Length: 637
Image (cartoon, helix red, strand yellow):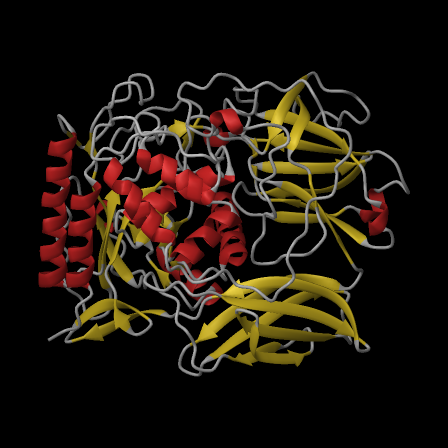
């Protein structure tokens, strides 16, 4: 294990005791201090809000699971076990009681349209929440139709409450039965969903849940990102079925469904809109905290929007990612009914024309966004990082190398990942996973829009997300102007980059996009200045280096092959020098280097696919990154 990795996982969980450093292809020892510095001086976590307790027992554990041997292991692979607990999976809406249903489930192939196997043991075992194609799932294969089954018990302390069954994400269509009763169906592989299962529960004893999954991947028309049944080149292994945490939580009959918190820096206020169930006539109370000290509060009806004063607000930024605590209560007749904990960051993002050139401003200041393309794949877990510590790792490396931005490419991460970005101070450009259809049908377009809206709603309160990217290089693109208007309507507080890589389809200028975003390999693209649209380079670089023993079999893809780590580092510095000139001469507002890690056949990462080796000199990368961000963030003379 490299020193870089040892320090990272020791700080953020996953490996525990740091192992001795092994020699790598670059000056990996130097990254240790950089990573340690990332956490030094970070603002404290938000507090004074309801915090989740330990997960209640879910009933007798299933047995018989064995992970398959991955093509490449990571330092976290051996830590995965049926007792692994990822912790509460929804940091922006916490409750004190919950029950984790991750672990070993029964699994089996299904025939299309077959009835659910109620009361019938399935032949195989799968580890949830790893996608079925991954080695860590124990299945290691794709099934278009499949069954998941497990039993559980409900704690007696939950008596008299409603019980919600929550899923972080299931790819793609999930139909749920509890004790033989069909609860409902959800479509969409990247957004969380909940189902009220109370009416299907037995008064006591063992309960049964069955999830039927349909996952056509690229044989269907749904958003799938870069998943393919036959991966290769820039297309990657499919990730089907349950791939994020499953859990239960008790709620009162009248309860809080969701909250939306929108900061207003001009007035030093936070607007809070709360959606509830069966809460007519009750009252919503919202309280904001700085540490343990209350700084503002408001109350009103569940159908209104509350305005909380946040005087002398501490602004959230990559340099100071301060998070306030937030408590939302539902009160009836003066008696507390329900309460959830959350947090928020006070920040703004906008495009401002200065001297006839549009630029991106964070909190009213020009801010150059320099980041990496992050595809979020793991050689052992696929879409799912092997442990919580692993989930944080790429963000930690990016921050330590001096980047302030991540473009989350063709994938939506678990809520914990965005919380990590919030607390580390990383700006996020969030892609919508693309459809595979060159000309999507009207039905496919509507499904895309429905899933896009759900993804926006699920992630709308994260201060780290500053930009939505609905389309990439024209893949599956349709009616870009209307999609842009929809996004501005759903979320007027963020930028919209209608088509990242607009030069591949020339549709960004007239779409209403806030930015024009060109892709160019390996050198960054030259942007034409505009008074109304900021300019970005959403992809450049792609410098490849094969590190023997740390690559996918026969992996060779990249845009420029380098012979060794020193040459790779020198070329990186050269390319960032070009970005620096563009920032100074054309007021380029952001640039995304491809990419943070190798993925499947791609070997153009700054770290290897197994996250064991850093390919570049961290000191040189951090130095040039700091210069580019500083030069690109200069106010006009």
